[in-house]
Image (cartoon, rainbow, N blue to C red):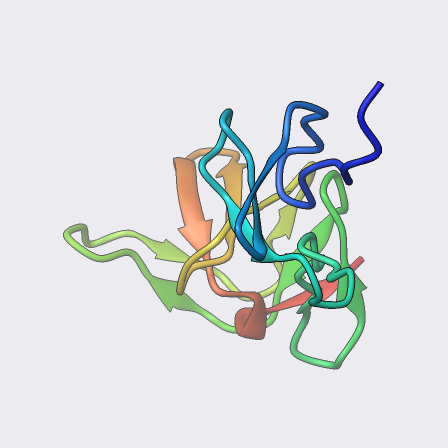
Amino acid sequence: MSNLPKCPKCNSEYTYEDGGMYICPECAHEWSADAPAENVEEKRVVKDAFGTVLNDGDSVTVIKDLKIKGSSSVVKGGTKVKNIRLVEGDHDIDCKIDGIGAMSLKSEFVKKA
């Protein structure tokens, strides 16, 4: 059994040593043998307009009227949105709004309900 460390990126146990580097054959991640163990998975924190941390599945309320790009519709301030999903990007909330459908929102325009 090998005493080499598991890959910090994908947790594979099939790492091998090449010179002063460890290499993972599954995800191609390379790291230094003398580097301290790093925490690769840093959880991204998304906060609402008032600084409250948001999580997947939360309910939020829109705090101001938002025009929908490419449409004449508007999401009115005070609209409650249930079961949000946090995603990467500028618009960091994916959700479905009753009467409008699926859309993305910026966390700066909502408050946690």
